Length: 292
Image (cartoon, rainbow, N blue to C red):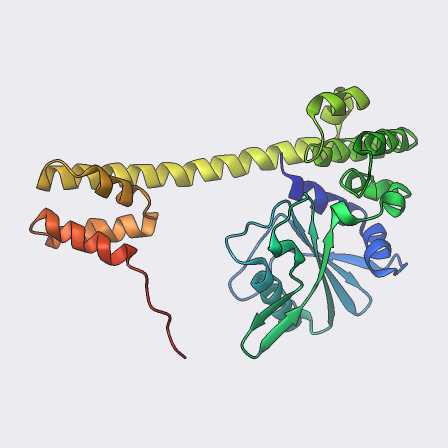
């Protein structure tokens, strides 16, 4: 289940509600922008761009602070791309969903020598739930807000969901609530307060399920490709040099697909297993920092 996709759905389904919450800006003239930018296209399920008058609201949702590209640099990267594309004022808000003590969630800027770029950070577990509870579009986020009694808060959210008159909206909001509540509450409590069949009937549940399957399949394909490359390398090395030491096998298994492909080419020039030892030693040798 994708928590980030759920937040993206909410922001794009109810852009006005998010603009009022984050910018105190009340308008119906809001456009959801495409999530692909020029230069080397980048797409992210957790990113939403809203154009409001002559301003862009960039929303970035994060379940955890872990990121392949450091989050502070990613915010700078998005900012420069958005500026190049639209050349207007840009408001960036990085929203962390799950409580953590990581230093990353307290960082509000990217700093590198003479470069400094600031952005806004919201840690949902520190947010007052009052405003979130008052808006159906923000009810799913309310489940993760500040409280001394999480169970009472979830019960209050469930009661607010039941008050939504329109059936489709109630089903979709309920599904989003249950998905995000999973970051904080046991499934037994969630199913006790919400009807599971309503969630399964909702559009957002089906969409999230499909995207989750697609992402899992893609990850499986990448993992399968690496496994095939690793098996091929080990067969070639064993045929050429006999048994490979377990320590070297462990090192080889940590190589990326690109590194495995490079090793496959390099081993053609190896004359002994010592060449393999030296090759791996070079790969895992800490590289000196490059000077400007």
